[in-house]
Image (cartoon, rainbow, N blue to C red; front, side, top):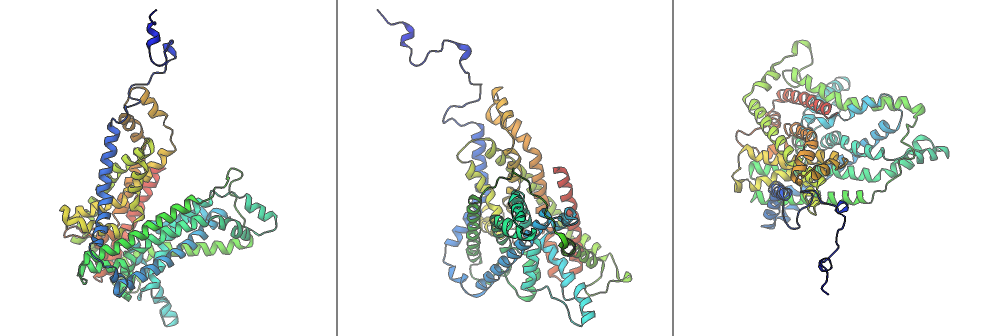
Length: 566
């Protein structure tokens, strides 16, 4: 007897069609067949390779073309490297100490007015460092208001800000908000149970914080120290304005001198070698930060939230000291900029008859300023738009799709955030002649995109990670392809975050100096370079006037961006 037809069918036989699961159209794709998402991923890899990996590879390749390492061990480079190391490490230690102390006082104690004080404490983060340097010259410079008053009282100046100590002080002032933000975020994750147990055992509030809370903050403190030290290692604005008058040369100012004067043989190769050293330092810092974050222990913060510790009799003196210190480093520089802007020349006494608007008129109407303002606005807006588009695509792709290359793509896109702007500028300076962008403003635009695209990637990734994918799944069930679901759901959902990130890129790029001054081309002067040129030419009051305008506009723009984000 021949077998029945059903007996010859291989595999299981479905007898109830109502119970058989049916895949929605477009919800799966055949293995090995690329779709629109894969095409977008390949395009993004090409973009980040051209914008990030190409300039970094050019630095490594040019540095390896000849052995310039002996130059790093002697002469000007060794001295500049030592100065950079001392200033970056010292300022990082100071920033961590100040930031940790403020985090403990403002987030853990009953200090008076701590909410308003927190806003003032974060103000230096919003002011460009080179603008802060110009402002502090009006306070502690040879003819600054504080030195003039001190000389009148005691016959000698109080402190000359020019030199190594001034560089370290200003780097600390402009980087302690970063340390405060990192330590404060870690402090909020520490429950107060352990502190309360120490208090019950007889410890004072200060002893409980020092013996319980501070040791738990060590990973965050180390992370803040690493980030601040790497950022300050290649800062250009403060060392050039404060250090050079006393011949305090750092790596950033030395590279600027090599580019401008060509005082060394094969300057690009030497600069590339320095850039590789800085790149290795930045990579080591990233590895240290990753190891610290992996070894960081987690505490159960659900038991009790952090409680405010009473300061007792120390509340009033600590309040006075905190308010006086924070207001001194926030309001005094702005007051100094305003004073210098309204006086005709340095050293002129502040009197009603000496006030003038000539500096403001000169600063805002000079052809170089107008050119710099137009270039800065155009380049920063274009950088904001490009970074918003690229960052939106990368942030959405790496958080809403599953692929082995997602981690690598996000790492490459975020890498420039840990690289000093000096290295970024050197990389683009090397490849500029080969891509036809040498001595053009578009070279600065490319460097801006490389330096700031990580801002948008981070802005987009954060909210998408905490959002469930039910909407995308519903779109797939309805028949949409993976690319259509990403575009209609994920990209539109992340668009406000991308716009906020792009706005932050615009406000950051419009005040940038390090990249712009090293990639300066004829007719491509930016606002930061305009202020730097006025300061170097001795037009201190005009530089102060332009700095004041940029600072006020930047603070207003950041305030509007923060309000829009809320």
